[in-house]
Length: 196
Image (cartoon, rainbow, N blue to C red):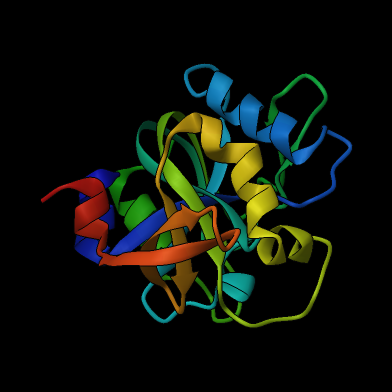
C-alpha cells in the first residue's frame, strides 16, 4: 500500500469521535496502539484539496503508515463499527475483501465527491497524530481541536509527531507549553511520511 500512497499522493488516517461506548478517547487510542498486530483498523485516504470534515471520518486522529495486510476496501463509507470483542463489522455490499492491488487503487482514486473511502487494515504502523484545521460544523470533537493542551496531555506519552491538516496539506507542529498550543514546524509531503 505504501507505493500506492506515494504514487497517488495520499496519506492514511484513522479518526476518533470524542465520545464512544467503547471507552474514553485515551482508552481507544491505547487500544489502537496495543492491537496493531492483532486487530483490524479502519482508515481512509486524504488527498491534496480534501476537506477533512467531509473526506475523512473525524477531524482528529492518527496518521497511519504502511500496512502489509488490507482485509477490505470500499470507495465510500463502509459503516464500519468496532464490536465489543474488538473486531470490526460493517457494510459488505460494494466492497472488496482481500482486495487486489487494482481494487485498492480504484478505491483510492474513485472515491465519490463529498464522502470518504474506507479500508480495513492489519499489521499497521502509526506515524503520528493529526488535528484538522479545516473549518466546519461544531461538534463534540471540537473540545479536542480547541483544547490543544488537553489533546497533547492525553497523547504525548506516545512520543510521536503531531500534524495539522488543512485542505489535505500536512504541517508538522510541536507543542508550545508556554502558550498551551501547537506551533508550526514545517510542511510535510506524503513522501516525507512514507519514504521515497
